[in-house]
Amino acid sequence: MKRDAYGDDGPAQKRHRQTDDEVTFLIPSKVAGSIIGKGGSNISKLRSQYKASITVPDCPGPERVLSITAEDDETLVEIIKDIMPCLAEFHNQGGSRMGDQELDVRMLIHQSRAGCVIGKAGSKIKELREKTGARLKIFSNSAPQSSERIVQLIGKPDSIVSGVREVLDLVRQVPIKGPIQAYDPHNYDDFYAEEYGGFGNGQGSGPSRSGNGGMRGPPRGPPRGIPPMGPAGRGPPPRGPPMGRSGPPGPRGGYNDFSGPGPRGNFNGPPRGGFSGGNFGGNFTGGGRGSGSGGGNFNNNGGNQQDTSTQVTIPKDLAGAIIGKAGSRIRKIRAESGAGIEIAEPLPGSNDRIITITGSPGRIQMAQYLLQQSVHESNPNLGRGNF
Image (cartoon, rainbow, N blue to C red; front, side, top):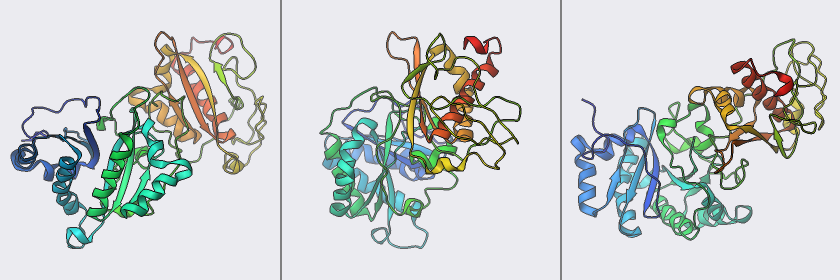
């Protein structure tokens, strides 16, 4: 019989919105059993001993969310210390004592608070590394379909505890800005796990996965306060469209429209440009009049170009055609274009949704082309000239 992930709280439920009294961690599903204990014995003991709320909702994927709500930070720290042996047992591959080995702990914080942990030009996170002895990293992409980012701490147990305490002190000084969407591990995305800090493909078995503890800067994406639909993963190098199709439109800045008349740079009409030899090449100008010639790979010079962002607006009823079932279509477009693509929820009273595309000009160009194709493939009745 499958063990109840809550121990004694009934079936798993969707995570509620996080408050400042609650601290959440992303853990490998394999660790959950040790934390819960046989028949929920361990988790019940912790709840009773510390008079705290501790939950590990069930999830069939490789990761779960551990939520802890305690009366004060000292109690919280003691709970974390008691849970450390479970993580140590999972990471321990050489039979070393817990105090001698490094652990990998991942906290979830609201994306609007990441900046206070990173600091100007990474100054604060560097200070935290030196002060605590832990290697800290904040992943630049939010967890799938959430407004939360992962803070990874790697080090010995004492360093981890010190790091968690410092991060909590920092984030609680900064009010949350923008919508709050807690991460639901049912939305786990194996393809982009490396991008947002998730566990997958056997990862999470030790700190070596991100041993350098490096930090990437703040995320590029939608306007501040609008959570992304999913991580803006880079994916593999983009592939050229099939022979015979017209080329993608060029990258553009500013807000553009899928519909209605407008300046060159919106999604009206067929894309311009050409293909020859079945591979995309050519130059990328603001007008998007790229011409192609066979070259083997998709304009590899794009890797030397600086990443930029562009945004387009679409009627919200077209979003489903782009996102696809369970996000399958948007993931494919990200993978094929190599661009980061985020679709924001519509603002109150608005019938439009904003798509933010991030990457080199070539990747943006390809992403725009594929987005347009996905809408027309799902609704052939949309004439290109009126699109």
